[in-house]
Amino acid sequence: MIGKKYPNNPHHQEKVESALQKVVGEFINNEAGPMSLITVTRVTFNEKSKQAMVFLSVLPEDQEEKALAFTKRKSSELREHVRETAKLSVLPIFEFVIDIGEKNRQRVEDIAAQDSINRGE
Image: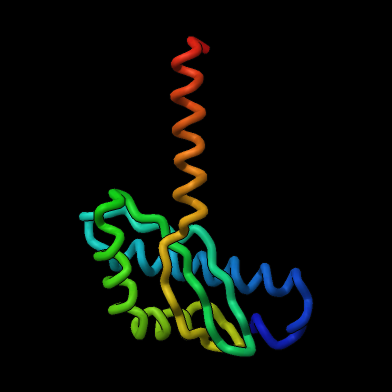
């Protein structure tokens, strides 16, 4: 069971967050419709507060609000799915946000690619 053995170990924290990212990502991919691509970019988890912050990337960007509404609407089903599949000692309460850092990273890549094209590289 992930969560009981080493609660103050940073490696343990990474393992829990990685497991949550995988399980949440699979759930969203299975439940979401074809109107947008919703990707779980990372998950942070605080065992004491039982809060899991799920960072999302959504394409096309104009579907972000609908994607957030969808994930919030499905959060109770997600909790049940996590209970059945993740083997965590603490069942998280999920909060969903758009990953602004990921959006900024993508913009920097786009600018760098355009700059390379302009230079003829």
